[in-house]
Length: 234
Image (tube, rainbow, N blue to C red; front, side, top):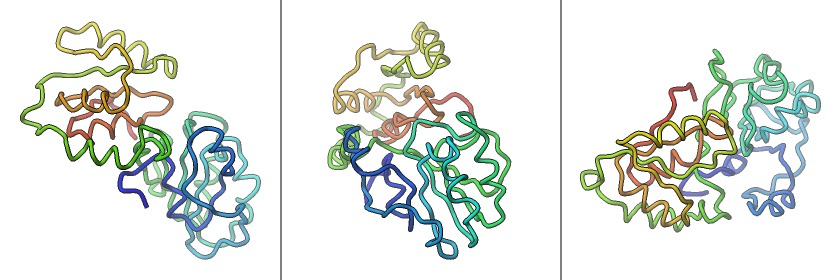
């Protein structure tokens, strides 16, 4: 179990996983934290927790392969994806959500404004531990060495953002960077230098990327800074 919640921790607490294989994640440089066998819906027992990679919600694979076989009460935990349920792909999630045997759905980047007490939003946390930005020892060291909040700059930092992931992000970044009370990090920095920069400020702007929730929220909080987000239900 990881100390700091990371992007791919969710399958580690599930009894089953409908996920890509380990080679898929190795090729992406991310690795995997679990060794679940291929998902078999007939092996689900009462109230088991099933990890489902969000891609398999979006493309209808979970619905088509498993939903009609869910004869027992079950729970879902979904994530490890840049897709957003309810905004990408089809409306397969609605049929899953309405299944009479579904108890709870723990979900990263959940459907916005979905009025269901079955959905429990989850944080995406940090990058995978196999990546530099998710190295658990490094995160712990940076957290323990952070500046006391009273000694931080009473200013707002706009960190470097990848502007190719979201047009709204690009528009907001250009507007915010023009404000006199916002200090801008123009160049991308190595991870530890970047975290040290966040550490200097009380407030850090975290603009939505492919989904409403982003790693930067947790990087800012790790360093004792307050993330500033666009007002959306997450």
